[in-house]
Image 1 (tube, rainbow, N blue to C red):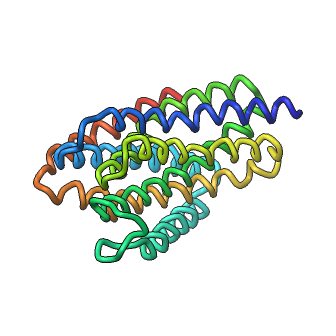
Image 2: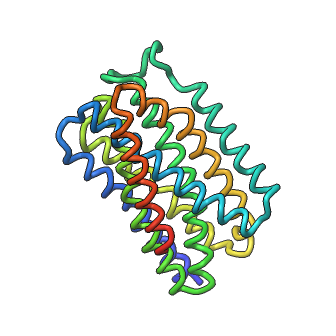
Length: 247
């Protein structure tokens, strides 16, 4: 049993840290123009809508019914609303100097939503690996692939706020660390973790939808590059559609 738990943890660690690859892509980009920034925000919004609707919420409805899924989505959105409310806003002093405090806040919200979303993914890898190792392996590979664009989505706003390239990439990688921890718990307590999975899926979906509607889409359409943002949204949505269906 110990080897099963360790293997599930290692698999999920690799897939979780794939967010760092996405952050690395942003790190190698030249200085972000506003056009590129809006394109990345639109891309992030498309990625998150696809994950939330086609992945998390769809799976929660399929396994847990509509009522508990609705409750999970509402709770997830409420938690992100509370987090957003108490984050420093543009007129408030931040604990360190940044070039764009709004982009910094946006990066923190994306980081939080993606980290929450990685928890049910880790639980899924851990519980599925404990039941059938080959299924856990396939799931981990699929998750790793779609974690790469998630890392891009997180690192973009952090780069725009003036954060160094590698620090932004590190934040993207750190967001994936909730995944192996959840996989460890899922593999160790498969019987207990499985019933919690649908509610955690809906919770993460609600958090992601909040960030998309409240922050990403309005901001990406506020600088005169709404077409680029829309193209980015469609590209992100279609990319995750393919990755989610492949998984």
